[in-house]
Image (cartoon, rainbow, N blue to C red; front, side):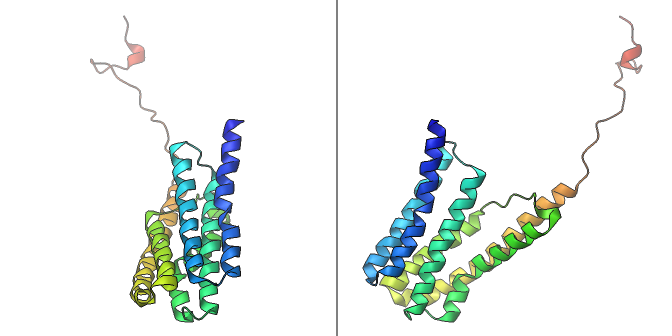
Amino acid sequence: MHRRASLVLLNTLSLSRLPLAAVFIAVSDLRLRAFLVVLAAATDFLDGWIARHRGLATRLGALIDPVADRAFMVTAFIVCLLDALIGPVELTLLLLRDIGTAIGFIVARLRPDMRAIELKARMLGKVVTTLQLAVLLCVLLYPPLVRPLVAFVALLSLASVVDYTRAVWRQRQRQELPPSRPSSRIPHGPTGAPMGSMRE
């Protein structure tokens, strides 16, 4: 019962980024929006830390966490676009990784031979997410840094998509390998005779 309650609390913490995204839409003060970004980042770090250190990682949590992350991030960037804080090209570059992984997820779920593949977060993808948060804070508080950071995020996003695709492809190849057969060789004793034929 305690584990179930902990999992509910953990998933609630992850899902809290959805109402934070709604509040981001509703408010217009840039500093308040920046505070919401920091708060969303804190909940992301906290739920991941708790899941790892208390052994609460689950397949459902592994799905909820990135979905909540993407929902907040995409919402925040679209709001910034509508408020003319960033342009369409910058938005596309910032969401390059998300578009690529979304396409990969859909393809993996549509193809029967790839449905059993477990889609896990990659370290490079986590780095991109961290940089996206940094860009979002710069958009709100320090615009001069936005363009160089966007270029850097775009390059890492391409690398992340390649890394993610290779990881999925390696899993698929491992699934296609035939199971290893047990050896049919008969063990021999020190005299060279089969073990079964040796007398005591």
